[in-house]
Length: 227
Image (cartoon, rainbow, N blue to C red; front, side, top):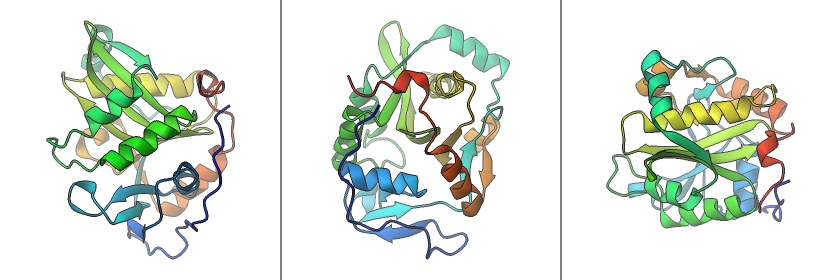
């Protein structure tokens, strides 16, 4: 199983957030125990400065974009794309995160501090990646945290058409392998995700779903923890 880091001394809660308010806190740190506690409470870190710079913000979008079992819509064209690429899990975590962090991307927000925080969470067995390859070249992927049956997706990228969608298809396959209920958190809905079947739920519904799945067994491939 993943290694549990020392607990955080920070208090992370959505208790004072108003409906429709996404930013619920400022400050704290990116220690593994802090980040894990945040996700368990339905919160994630992202800097509020330019390019995701300081100060560090803590977010709990209302409404929240999620996928539940059966939600993902895989079109015929996407099925063809799945057949054109190779998708792997946890074979190039840092490469995926650094590709997502490329400062030339529109809306770039992943700082070097964020990169190192999630690389450490990967080392401890909490953070995971899906990689998409074309002839041995990394052309897409995504990464996030797995806590029980919650997968909190942080970011994705593509360098070939449909590559990030293929990563999402592979992730849903992993989450579905054991036939257990799961929640895939994508933070905010977008038109792109809406075409794939994302749903929006209010914060209280999302927090209730997190409470239901966060203590369940991880998908079997991740139960062994770090290697």
